[in-house]
Image (cartoon, rainbow over all chains, first blue to last red; front, side, top):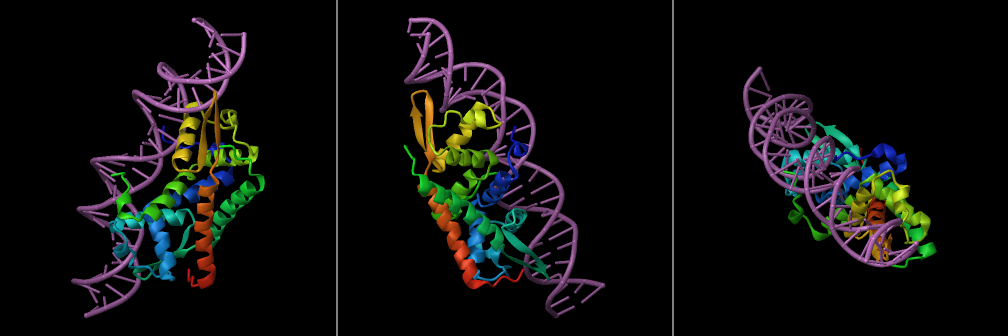
Length: 110
Length: 110
DNA sequence: AATCTATATCGTAATATTGCAATATAAAAA
DNA sequence: TTTTTATATTGCAATATTACGATATAGATT
């Protein structure tokens, strides 16, 4: 099929999956890291920083935005995107929670 | 094309992308959460816990294992999988690091 | 207004993912 | 040994993703 049965899972599970999926491509990881590095949200030069064509980058930015990982909009003829901290925090909390639970129980047998 | 240009990105970027991608499907999120919940790695009943057919679940388990999110093997005629803490910690550190940097700088304009 | 510059969208080809029926495999139980 | 039980693999259809050339859009510049 190729169609994910999203309706069979909880909203929370789908939400985490959506955010993680957006992080699930090296180009998007690179974009996020670049945004973090430049420490600014004016990032019109991002096209020169990645080994991908402009339409491809635009598409990746769109997906990051849809997933809530970045926010921003056009400012004149330059984009103005920056990382959405709230979403990163969600991820951090989620994995921190799992880590904490794992440390607590330690019932691994494998 | 449909083929990711992995060779254009760093190993670290590819590694994070691979792990995140494995988390990027609600069924796999559900599997991870189930493994966490049962607090045990004998999980032969996972097929009854998910709204998916057995081959589909087997496939998702394989992907989780390839990404290093779970470890384990067959024990008799039952699977024995559990969460690989090291990989979860990698994720936690990665996003914790981003969060920390964001808190430090606070240069968001969007 | 005409042009330049930067980003988005469209269209499309190549590849990947998702899901499952059918089947294979292998240990356990009878 | 035969059967049962549990998981993996194969094969395939439907859908999604990735990438980019061509083109559209829109503010900035001249």
